[in-house]
Structures are given as C-alpha cells and as structure tokens.
Length: 125
Image (cartoon, rainbow, N blue to C red):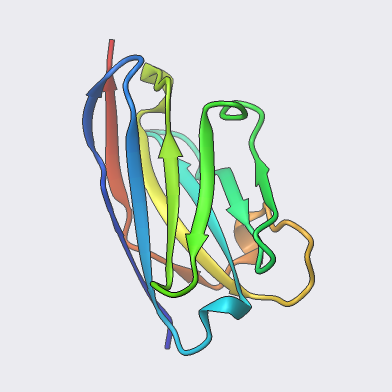
C-alpha cells in the first residue's frame, strides 16, 4: 500500500514562491518515479513535473524555468519548488507515484497508480 501526503500549499501573490512537499509511505522509495500534476477548476488534471528514480527531471512547458522538482530518498519525500508564480498556476496540486526502474520520464496521468489527496495553491494577482 502506497500513501502519499502533500503539504505546503497556500495563498501567495503573483511573483512569489511556494515549496510543496509529498511524503511517501512506501518500503522502497528509490524504486518510484514521482510526479506532480495540477487541476484547476473546470479543467483536466495536467502534468507539471516528474522526477525519476535516477533524479532526472521533466517539466511541462508552462512551468519550465520556474518550477524545480527534487527528491530526498532518505526522507522518502519529493519536493516542488515553485518560483515566479502566476495566477494561472492556481490549482490543486497532486503528487503521484509509480514503481518504475527505467529512466524515462512519466508524464501521463494513466502512467501513475498512486495519488495523494492534493494541496491547494492559490496565486493572487
């Protein structure tokens, strides 16, 4: 059983920063690719970033250069550092996990089996 718990969301002004965390309750965290997705009201859940078991990262074009994904395997936690936030970044942010040993980035929702409950990020203009 994999449990993911996100934290760190909140209200921030445009141009500000937030760091999201996702703590995983798994036996072998190093075997999981970790992804970040977001869902704005009335929209589909979309890919934001992913970090592989080898710490390779991939990003959606809309967040490249502003968001950074990282992981701390000793703490079984993945992070999403979000800088230069924009109102259009407002969404519920979800953490996802998938057991995968290949180094390829996973960017589709259906590639992940495990999801957190989400954390709200609101960026005011």
